[in-house]
Length: 213
Image (cartoon, rainbow, N blue to C red; front, top):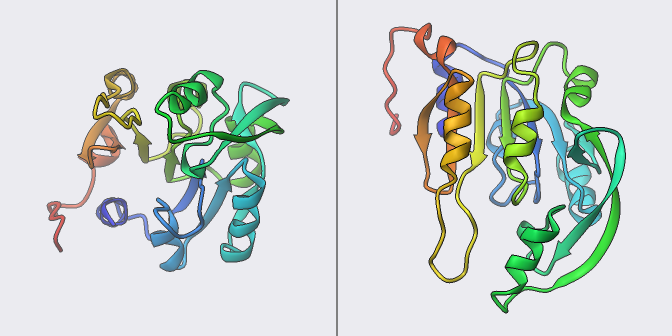
Protein backbone atom coordinates (compact mmCIF):
# COMPACT_ATOMS: atom_id res chain seq x y z
CA UNK A 1 0.00 0.00 0.00
CA UNK A 2 2.91 2.34 0.71
CA UNK A 3 4.39 1.57 -2.71
CA UNK A 4 1.00 2.15 -4.33
CA UNK A 5 0.79 5.56 -2.70
CA UNK A 6 4.31 6.48 -3.85
CA UNK A 7 3.51 5.43 -7.42
CA UNK A 8 0.44 7.66 -7.31
CA UNK A 9 2.50 10.62 -6.09
CA UNK A 10 4.97 10.03 -8.90
CA UNK A 11 2.14 10.07 -11.42
CA UNK A 12 2.68 6.47 -12.56
CA UNK A 13 -0.83 5.26 -13.26
CA UNK A 14 -0.20 1.77 -14.65
CA UNK A 15 3.07 0.59 -13.12
CA UNK A 16 4.94 -2.50 -14.24
CA UNK A 17 6.64 -4.51 -11.52
CA UNK A 18 9.41 -7.09 -11.20
CA UNK A 19 9.01 -9.37 -8.19
CA UNK A 20 12.22 -11.32 -7.53
CA UNK A 21 11.56 -14.03 -4.97
CA UNK A 22 7.80 -13.68 -5.34
CA UNK A 23 6.99 -16.69 -3.12
CA UNK A 24 3.23 -17.04 -2.56
CA UNK A 25 1.08 -15.22 -5.16
CA UNK A 26 -1.14 -13.61 -2.51
CA UNK A 27 -0.03 -14.08 1.11
CA UNK A 28 2.61 -11.53 2.18
CA UNK A 29 3.27 -10.80 -1.47
CA UNK A 30 4.74 -7.37 -2.22
CA UNK A 31 3.08 -6.95 -5.63
CA UNK A 32 -0.36 -8.54 -5.17
CA UNK A 33 -1.87 -5.21 -4.08
CA UNK A 34 -0.92 -3.74 -7.46
CA UNK A 35 -2.10 -6.84 -9.32
CA UNK A 36 -5.53 -6.44 -7.71
CA UNK A 37 -5.56 -2.85 -8.98
CA UNK A 38 -5.18 -4.11 -12.56
CA UNK A 39 -1.40 -3.81 -12.92
CA UNK A 40 0.87 -6.57 -14.20
CA UNK A 41 4.51 -7.51 -14.30
CA UNK A 42 7.00 -10.34 -13.96
CA UNK A 43 7.29 -12.74 -11.03
CA UNK A 44 10.52 -14.70 -10.54
CA UNK A 45 10.18 -17.74 -8.29
CA UNK A 46 12.58 -20.72 -8.30
CA UNK A 47 10.45 -23.01 -6.09
CA UNK A 48 8.42 -25.22 -8.50
CA UNK A 49 5.52 -25.59 -6.03
CA UNK A 50 5.17 -21.84 -5.53
CA UNK A 51 5.66 -21.24 -9.24
CA UNK A 52 2.58 -23.38 -9.98
CA UNK A 53 0.57 -21.32 -7.51
CA UNK A 54 1.73 -18.12 -9.21
CA UNK A 55 0.71 -19.43 -12.63
CA UNK A 56 -2.72 -20.29 -11.26
CA UNK A 57 -3.40 -17.08 -9.33
CA UNK A 58 -1.44 -14.48 -11.31
CA UNK A 59 -2.41 -15.28 -14.90
CA UNK A 60 -2.05 -11.71 -16.13
CA UNK A 61 1.60 -11.71 -15.04
CA UNK A 62 4.63 -13.33 -16.64
CA UNK A 63 5.74 -16.02 -14.19
CA UNK A 64 9.26 -17.45 -14.45
CA UNK A 65 10.44 -20.61 -12.69
CA UNK A 66 14.06 -19.47 -12.49
CA UNK A 67 16.48 -17.69 -10.21
CA UNK A 68 18.54 -14.55 -10.70
CA UNK A 69 22.30 -14.85 -11.09
CA UNK A 70 25.27 -13.43 -12.92
CA UNK A 71 24.46 -15.24 -16.15
CA UNK A 72 22.75 -18.21 -17.76
CA UNK A 73 23.66 -21.20 -15.63
CA UNK A 74 22.19 -23.72 -13.21
CA UNK A 75 22.53 -23.49 -9.43
CA UNK A 76 21.44 -25.49 -6.40
CA UNK A 77 18.31 -24.17 -4.71
CA UNK A 78 17.71 -25.17 -1.08
CA UNK A 79 14.02 -25.68 -0.34
CA UNK A 80 13.46 -25.25 3.40
CA UNK A 81 10.52 -26.42 5.47
CA UNK A 82 9.41 -22.78 5.74
CA UNK A 83 9.25 -21.91 2.06
CA UNK A 84 9.71 -18.20 2.67
CA UNK A 85 13.28 -19.05 3.76
CA UNK A 86 14.32 -21.11 0.72
CA UNK A 87 17.49 -19.80 -0.87
CA UNK A 88 20.30 -20.28 -3.39
CA UNK A 89 22.77 -19.43 -0.62
CA UNK A 90 24.09 -22.55 1.10
CA UNK A 91 25.58 -20.42 3.87
CA UNK A 92 22.20 -18.85 4.59
CA UNK A 93 20.40 -22.20 4.49
CA UNK A 94 22.83 -23.73 7.00
CA UNK A 95 22.45 -20.73 9.30
CA UNK A 96 18.68 -21.23 9.32
CA UNK A 97 19.16 -24.94 10.09
CA UNK A 98 21.27 -24.11 13.11
CA UNK A 99 18.25 -22.61 14.86
CA UNK A 100 16.80 -26.10 15.07
CA UNK A 101 13.35 -25.41 13.63
CA UNK A 102 14.12 -25.67 9.94
CA UNK A 103 15.26 -28.45 7.65
CA UNK A 104 16.25 -28.68 4.02
CA UNK A 105 13.40 -30.59 2.41
CA UNK A 106 15.22 -30.95 -0.88
CA UNK A 107 17.96 -29.56 -3.07
CA UNK A 108 17.01 -28.88 -6.66
CA UNK A 109 18.89 -27.59 -9.68
CA UNK A 110 17.33 -24.43 -11.09
CA UNK A 111 18.23 -22.31 -14.08
CA UNK A 112 19.22 -18.73 -13.33
CA UNK A 113 19.35 -15.73 -15.62
CA UNK A 114 20.84 -12.26 -15.52
CA UNK A 115 18.32 -9.71 -14.27
CA UNK A 116 19.14 -7.24 -17.05
CA UNK A 117 18.27 -9.83 -19.68
CA UNK A 118 14.90 -10.39 -18.03
CA UNK A 119 14.19 -6.67 -17.95
CA UNK A 120 15.20 -6.29 -21.59
CA UNK A 121 13.04 -9.24 -22.67
CA UNK A 122 9.85 -8.64 -20.72
CA UNK A 123 9.59 -4.86 -20.21
CA UNK A 124 8.98 -2.22 -22.86
CA UNK A 125 11.31 0.16 -21.08
CA UNK A 126 11.80 -0.84 -17.43
CA UNK A 127 9.94 -2.01 -14.32
CA UNK A 128 8.69 0.94 -12.30
CA UNK A 129 8.85 -1.11 -9.12
CA UNK A 130 11.20 -3.93 -8.08
CA UNK A 131 10.51 -6.13 -5.06
CA UNK A 132 13.56 -8.10 -3.92
CA UNK A 133 13.50 -10.85 -1.29
CA UNK A 134 15.98 -13.65 -1.94
CA UNK A 135 17.30 -14.64 1.48
CA UNK A 136 20.87 -13.47 1.51
CA UNK A 137 21.60 -12.53 -2.10
CA UNK A 138 19.93 -9.13 -2.28
CA UNK A 139 23.15 -7.12 -2.52
CA UNK A 140 24.55 -9.32 -5.28
CA UNK A 141 21.42 -8.86 -7.38
CA UNK A 142 21.19 -5.12 -6.72
CA UNK A 143 24.76 -4.59 -7.88
CA UNK A 144 24.06 -6.55 -11.06
CA UNK A 145 21.18 -4.29 -12.17
CA UNK A 146 22.18 -1.75 -14.80
CA UNK A 147 20.69 1.34 -13.15
CA UNK A 148 22.12 3.58 -15.83
CA UNK A 149 20.13 2.12 -18.72
CA UNK A 150 16.90 0.93 -17.07
CA UNK A 151 16.28 2.69 -13.78
CA UNK A 152 13.24 1.65 -11.71
CA UNK A 153 11.63 4.42 -9.71
CA UNK A 154 11.03 2.23 -6.64
CA UNK A 155 12.72 -0.70 -4.91
CA UNK A 156 11.40 -2.65 -1.94
CA UNK A 157 14.25 -4.71 -0.50
CA UNK A 158 14.39 -7.00 2.52
CA UNK A 159 17.04 -5.33 4.66
CA UNK A 160 16.77 -7.32 7.89
CA UNK A 161 18.45 -10.65 8.57
CA UNK A 162 16.15 -13.49 9.58
CA UNK A 163 16.87 -15.00 12.99
CA UNK A 164 14.99 -17.04 15.56
CA UNK A 165 16.90 -15.79 18.61
CA UNK A 166 16.15 -12.05 18.42
CA UNK A 167 19.60 -11.20 17.05
CA UNK A 168 18.42 -9.79 13.71
CA UNK A 169 20.47 -6.98 12.25
CA UNK A 170 19.75 -4.26 9.70
CA UNK A 171 21.71 -4.69 6.48
CA UNK A 172 23.02 -1.15 6.37
CA UNK A 173 25.33 -1.98 3.48
CA UNK A 174 22.27 -2.32 1.22
CA UNK A 175 20.96 1.06 2.36
CA UNK A 176 24.36 2.66 1.83
CA UNK A 177 24.67 1.13 -1.64
CA UNK A 178 21.24 2.36 -2.73
CA UNK A 179 22.03 5.83 -1.45
CA UNK A 180 25.27 5.75 -3.44
CA UNK A 181 23.14 5.00 -6.51
CA UNK A 182 21.05 8.14 -5.86
CA UNK A 183 18.04 6.50 -4.22
CA UNK A 184 16.51 7.83 -1.02
CA UNK A 185 14.98 5.83 1.83
CA UNK A 186 11.33 6.82 1.53
CA UNK A 187 9.89 4.30 4.01
CA UNK A 188 11.00 1.44 6.21
CA UNK A 189 8.85 -1.35 7.65
CA UNK A 190 11.70 -2.73 9.76
CA UNK A 191 11.89 -5.88 7.60
CA UNK A 192 11.81 -4.06 4.26
CA UNK A 193 13.22 -0.74 3.10
CA UNK A 194 11.51 1.18 0.29
CA UNK A 195 13.86 3.20 -1.90
CA UNK A 196 12.81 5.85 -4.41
CA UNK A 197 14.90 7.37 -7.18
CA UNK A 198 15.96 10.78 -5.89
CA UNK A 199 15.21 12.69 -9.08
CA UNK A 200 11.75 11.11 -9.44
CA UNK A 201 10.88 11.97 -5.85
CA UNK A 202 12.07 15.57 -6.10
CA UNK A 203 10.02 16.07 -9.26
CA UNK A 204 6.80 14.56 -7.92
CA UNK A 205 3.61 16.66 -7.73
CA UNK A 206 3.01 19.28 -5.07
CA UNK A 207 1.00 16.85 -2.90
CA UNK A 208 2.65 15.60 0.25
CA UNK A 209 2.87 11.98 1.35
CA UNK A 210 0.26 11.02 3.95
CA UNK A 211 0.45 7.26 4.70
CA UNK A 212 -3.09 7.09 6.11
CA UNK A 213 -4.83 8.62 3.11
